[in-house]
Length: 107
Image (cartoon, rainbow, N blue to C red; front, side):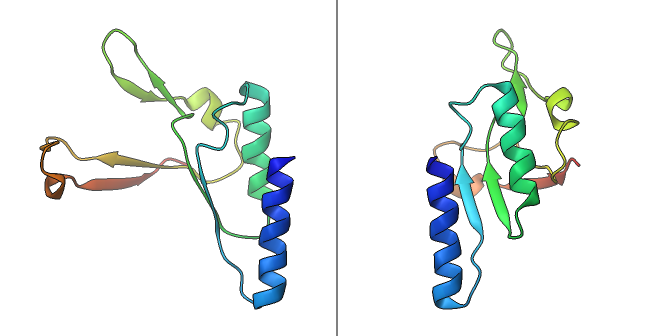
């Protein structure tokens, strides 16, 4: 329901300003279950506008080691493009100017 409102606002803005803006989502599926999450990503992929989704949903984190690995079981079910944005290590968490990022295409 909330997503429908966001899409409606986006469509009205596009019609009124005659310019299309991208949709940017930050963790939109954090309260979803697995099936609903996969469906969301595949529906978003069919929308005729640019969508950027920032999420940690496609990562598996080992609770004992803290190691992060991509969840390819979930990624392979998606029809959309997937990129990973990572911080380059090492960096000084007290000095933000030392943080660099790398964008890697996954799919």
